[in-house]
Image 1 (cartoon, one colour):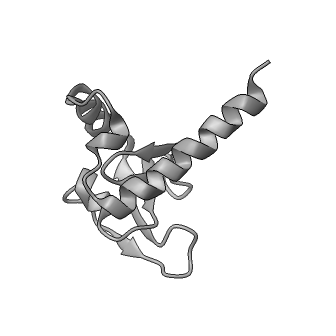
Image 2 (image 1 turned 45 degrees about the vertical axis):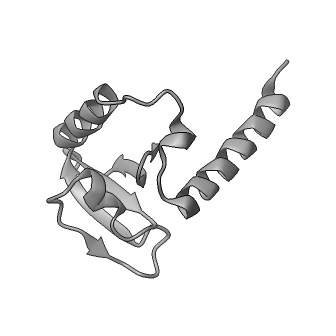
Amino acid sequence: MWIFCDAFLSIVRDRNDVKKLLVRSRIAGDIEKVFGSAKISHTPRADYPFRASIDAGTVARTIAARIEAIEYDNFKNSISESERCSVYSTVWQMMRRAQGVWDT
């Protein structure tokens, strides 16, 4: 699962511990923005160089709390970092293009 917020996260099952999820990021500091006390490992040559193995319940509760706290009515406008906003806008444009491909 990909999550775009003030951080970009990729969340998958931890193959070394099925009770945990592996929260991954390409950008330093993104995991900490969402999971402040997580123990981060740095693997520079990996597709996602920043990783944290976190209890699945903790991940679910943390993401759910962020969803419940949403106050904005436009996600792109809620992103304060200009470079991140630019990247997210590009993703938005690509998904809009995909919408045209998949519409029937």
